Image 1 (cartoon, rainbow, N blue to C red):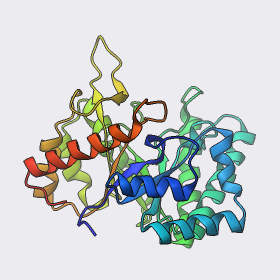
Image 2: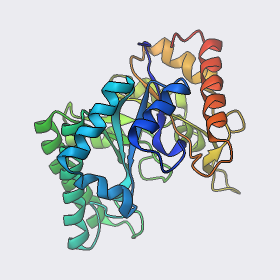
Image 3: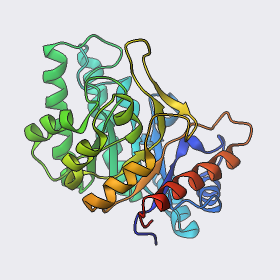
Image 4: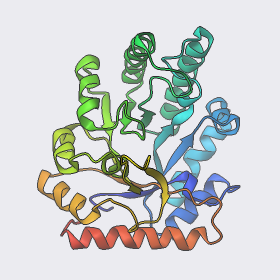
Length: 286
């Protein structure tokens, strides 16, 4: 096993595959694990209601392929946020969280990545912030009981777009089961001091997303996805050099969206090779 496992996001893989096929393809492309997506679509939210047989099938596939599913990107809360003004939506957010923790526990998923939004399709106010905090406190209590980690992603909106901002929430939540999941693309696009931000959170990072982005400027809202590796603003060699200096001990996840690509497998392999080359540039041992 690599010292720093390199995984691939589920949405980077061709659609319509079974889990055994999905994991086998990730392995063939040189990746160590797959991050599951439970997004705001009805189809992926339905995974939270998998039967015992469906849960066992995923576990069996990980054992047979040797490719794990250690993390879940739970972005379904964008549609059903804890901070919503609608009490019915808040209850749905709690139901999603409870079912996600149960699915993680059953399938061996150790980390649930939460989107750092109090609300997404509604206006933020004091009430949305208060409900978001209450939802996090509630969620962490249940995740801790199941021994499942909750990790907040550094996002593509100003609300939690830096580890510094996440630290404010860490001070309120105060739990070893509440960590941060930095996305170096988002950190870079918001023009953060990426080295300082990574150093600030180094002892609380659950894993790291790797993607390229284009920066937010006075004239441009930034590009937070679908930027080919090497064509954006992320200094990947610098990132790996800083992480080496700070003693990072953890996994990386290549975040891509190639479900509609004509040659998704070729893009996956090219992305892995790009990342591994930048690691070598920095003297960072994978």
